[in-house]
Image (cartoon, rainbow, N blue to C red; front, side, top):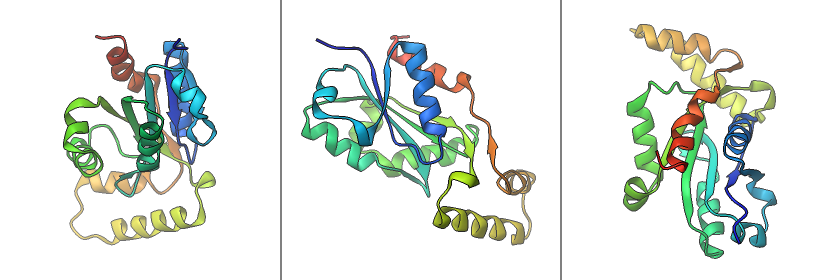
Length: 177
């Protein structure tokens, strides 16, 4: 017997966890860190979602989550990814999906991007260093567009642009709308 929706997540700085909890609250589902889920728990929920961050163009932990679900005979019903990039960067987001999902997943697996933010205080040293190098390169770039200039200003510090509004398309999908 199904206990409802399971929202598995992998969260490094808290944005994905926050979104998983928002989705759980909105749907009556259960949000659970993917590292803490047992095979018994997996088989007692339907549908099962997975959420994680976009990290250097990759969906962090998606390969491991995919294997975990497949090894336990569970189908993934939807995928959500969080990141610092604004939702308006559709070309970059589309490329991220193409680089991370199979052709079958692209066409059959509902997938959603939700902008979150940056939290330098919770990042590991490598990620902080990578962001600072990226910021330095952005500032040194000649002929930046106004959007690139603004983006460099934004990523210079921690920020949070997450919103309940960004879960709406996923929740509507789950409700069959």
